[in-house]
Length: 325
Image (cartoon, rainbow, N blue to C red):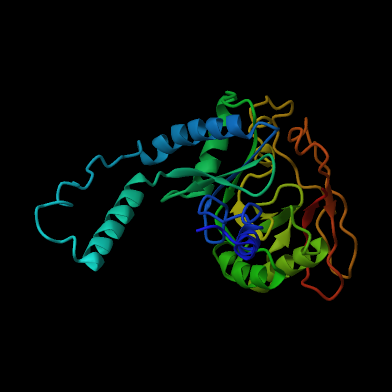
């Protein structure tokens, strides 16, 4: 039957935007995931290969070699001579069960996903603490000074994710930060913030809200911009907010694997600078004095840190660090 002009118009209208519509898949960074954000310089494919090699090497040390299940369900019972072909519902359930079983067996402890930003690779982790693993890697690199990567710049653990809207971030972080900062727990801290492909949040608004949360959990939590016990890392990519709380952020050169292997010129640990911590009454915070070293790499060379003081009337002793883009 010949196609009429009206039917051709309908088909064009139906499929006009088919090629332009981006279908969201499970291979993208989403809310609810844990993993590791890895920055690189214009070579994401090689960065991903280096990341898998490095992560598996140290994961084997912490958790043992990855175990693979070679026991696949037998397909011989699909056609077992019985007249089950007529039962469509039973056949469909059986197929779904086999697909789920196969998918679960093929899940790896590390899976590369689309991060949503250029020069950033996201490695999703399964049954692994990303913070523990990254700290273990940096601790070994810092101690041995052995360079084990060429294109990887920074490795940032992602212990939690939420929607990158101020209301969602406040609700999520109010609970997420409790193990470190809720009384009787307390500590000195700084907040490091960076947003990629996202402009719907005002930087100062987000930082002040998060600093206020830390003060509400325990007023004894104080900012330390030189050598804090904890660094709260906030990485926003599109509509996803990646969060982690790490130790030794300054000691490990802001988690830069290229810088952490360099021999320190001064072996003494960083000293707290008098007056670097914000005081009550709305006084300005003095800029912290630190040697930025070489840079975090081409992708981070233009980043500078700026201290934004908390306005008078907010929690005493709160402060934060921003990364200019």
